[in-house]
Length: 143
Image (cartoon, rainbow, N blue to C red; front, side, top):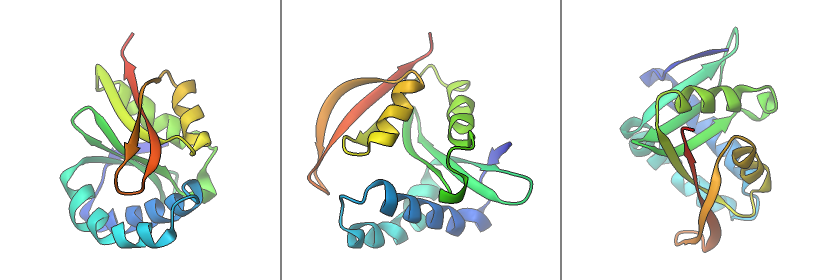
């Protein structure tokens, strides 16, 4: 497992991973919403965040994007989920931070459980105004 800073030439690949992952993990949100966010992900969100990619021997298989101590995105290519890449990226970021916050959709049980298992606690329940979906604000603090 290799983790490094994203290259500009890889941003499009990250948007593909994000889009495909979002459709599956957030199947309770209309797919047109995710489609409408692709350009902003590629031109705004990924370029303005601190983004690291994880790769196997051949390909980039996932990424994490941070905005200061806020985990804005953590996505692993569908074919590579369950291989430890997400935990690897999360551990990599935890070594660089004293605390991390994130928001996750309440109905995305797989992600909620992943973060709980990795030491995050639910701080509050909020409503995502763009999607009208309930979400959890979660936080991790270095022990």
